[in-house]
Length: 159
Image 1 (cartoon, helix red, strand yellow):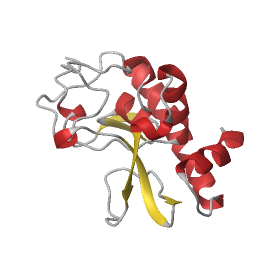
Image 2 (cartoon, one colour; image 1 turned 180 degrees about the vertical axis):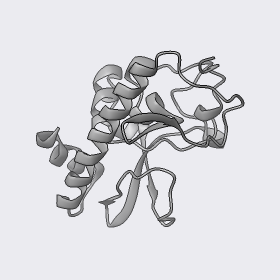
Image 3 (cartoon, helix red, strand yellow; image 1 turned 135 degrees about the vertical axis):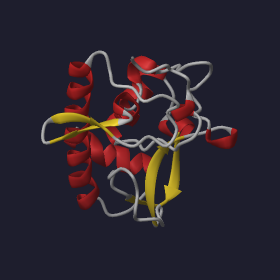
Image 4 (cartoon, helix red, strand yellow; image 1 turned 90 degrees about the vertical axis):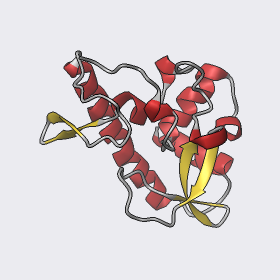
């Protein structure tokens, strides 16, 4: 059984973004990053995923997809309106690679216990996501501080 596309993961979580995701979504939708990216000050430290924080306007922040009321993703309307260009976190959830093998993470919202029908696609997306997060961490280390727009401009040559 595959994902039932119930939307639970689109309506319960913040979705961390990489600069790759932001640029891809911006180019696909014509929206400016400030129209779909929110900043969340990272005060937790112990998170499920390992996306880096970046200093934006003096605050250590996570870049996330903007949400509507009750944490519903702004691109979720009876399905994902940016599905072909969705963030890699969305493409891979609730799976990750461990020692090259696709494994399920413990989902806090999936109503079904499932495994992808196209395992190779998920493995490929997980490898790409891991690669992007690794590069994002390098970019974040070099970045000092500034606006979101300045950070994205700073990131472009690395992408």
